[in-house]
Image (cartoon, rainbow, N blue to C red; front, side, top):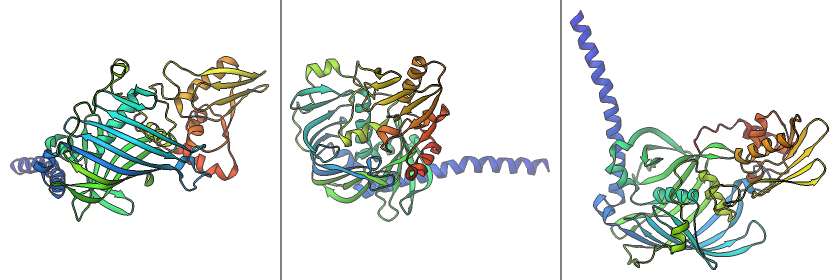
Length: 409
């Protein structure tokens, strides 16, 4: 009997060790099938660079005219990218036709991103990017890179099996891939084996834990490999950017100084931020052309928030991209708007308490639902403030209050 029990225990141990191995093999097989569908590992490794010309469109769901309305169309763009895949560098020349916010404006600028720094060039010269902007661009270059699957194949211990994942109405096989500090979930088309979407879990200041997907389509041959020519960026299934490649060349001649940073940029440059990167804020404020290029996030480098008295017992919070108003009543405080997120809300709450000691914040009045004016609402709810909104918006803000925020920023 004792002998039989020992055999059973040994079998159970063997099975428990075999199951993860089978799952791991399944994950790596999905990666290898996708690489084969794209042209094979050798062909992908031989793809050292790309020259891309294309068109783009941008939307912002949280700038809609009304809660739950159509995402606001922000504008069109054309772009030219010189992409050194082998060295992880890209130079993107943008011609933006921005329709919103008012007034409409046409903008021309170039973003140059290297593994250690980034800089922006326009008619005023070149300036270093903030660390959070560099980090966001590097993550997105990695997401869209034809080399992503080869990197996964070369690091099999960083690849893990996952159950099928939802993409719209589809349920697709998927793996996770830890690429440095980023966990990508790669979903595969069951028929073609090509990548269907590359997902990250991001924190959104309105919706909390969110799926941010690069949905790939319109695969075409570029040299000896296939490259997706339709790139749709979606937040929880809602499109926020659409890039369409019109012309793609493999292994272009790249000028020796194509990525050379001016000395002034080198002196001021910061490396990519390695923590506390609000990816959704950075990317979508860039789409909106309202990004404050600062690691302070809500105000320029060297700046800060401050109270400015407009009248007795009325303070205006200034210095950020959007402002608050503090009104001191006889026995309580009323705050108007909750810009950005916890960072600004925490400062305003502390400043209000210091300015008017003993008076609790009783009401938060939200003038409209846009994410740059309401992203910090939850911090006031934690202070037990009552949130005042138009009655048609009540359900929206109840959902905002309940949204989990577990993704590290």
